Amino acid sequence: MLLEETGELAKAIRKAETKMSIDVNKLQNYGTIESEVADVFFVLAAVCNKLNINLFDALMEKEEINCKRDWCFERPLE
Picture (cartoon, rainbow, N blue to C red):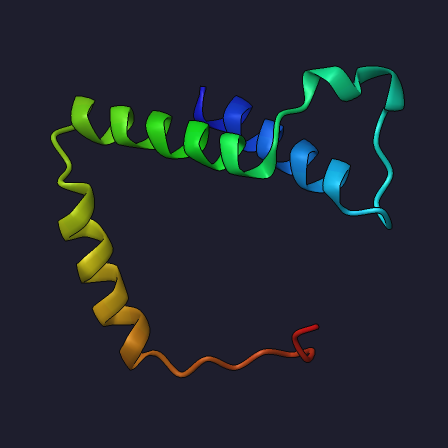
């Protein structure tokens, strides 16, 4: 379900971004970016609950790692 919700988020982003193509016959199936982000978060939280993962702790631990990381990108961010 997490992958399905992430796909719906991608479609909502493509719907909102005029430079990206989307199946106009299915526009009614695509929610807003905000609602799709919420769906992804809800499913992710459910996965974490099922696996006994404290999502807040996992985020804090990963942020600590990221803050120490040397971020090197091969191409400039746009």
